[in-house]
Image 1: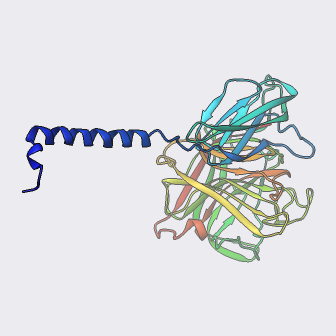
Image 2 (image 1 turned 45 degrees about the vertical axis):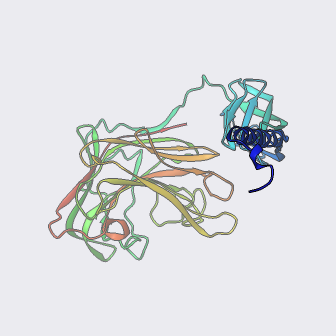
Image 3 (image 1 turned 180 degrees about the vertical axis):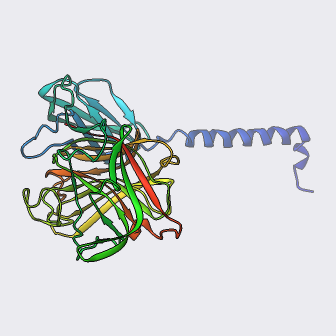
Length: 383
């Protein structure tokens, strides 16, 4: 037995345990009072892009829109204030804003970057924006409502019939295009473009299919194109609603060398609607061009589902201005492409309507194919 141990009764032991526990609590409590570290954002970078701005239009394209991008180290959220208005907070590094005041005016833009602890830094900028007159409505500059009977209006449409590829067409297509009424005619309020299975010889070259390819006799730069159409259901058909730069040197096109002689793809191509011969559910929107800096071929695009495209009419739309090009089906955006200086989309284009047979997108033609029709309710161009 240890001397003096008789003093450590059960009650004393309990008291000593609680005293020790209290001391430990005081130690932990004191250690928790150390100040928390805080981080302040740093190196805030702000980039302001005026939509449609160019050397000749520094205030933009009249939309009044700006796009602001911000980045700061250790920032977790941002806030934006336009022309002294309300602070708009977001976790996004980008923010778009439209100034509604008409005319050319200078505005302030403030950007704030916040850290987790709430510390912030900010940067202010001035920007000059042009906002066009909103009362100005788009003007209809070209249209065919197809409210007549017979051949397509010769004052508006040109039949392109000369095969530029040694009497044939590119992309391994297997049809001849004709100007015969059997392949294109207007009746009951719509234009019919009809592909037939038949032997036909043109320019000394024989083909097993015929169709029609129409060029608009109107060329335009920028605007909104609307084509309301119902597409062919038959396999092997490759219907298209599209534009080409009027400076293309393709044999047999309506404008010849009136606007230039640059060839494809330097002229630029906009496919408002194409449909594969083996897929009658989806439609395609695509852009093809030659890079104006390097000459290299480039293309971008996408597709969207239009399950009843062969049973019902749908509106195929191109919206084209100096800063962007957008292709829509009805109200659905299919693809948007920035119209930057390295693309040749600042020159006049014309509209093409056609059905090709076989080829890259038409694919295999069923043995039992006889004919197929694309119907066009109207074509309209607004500027």
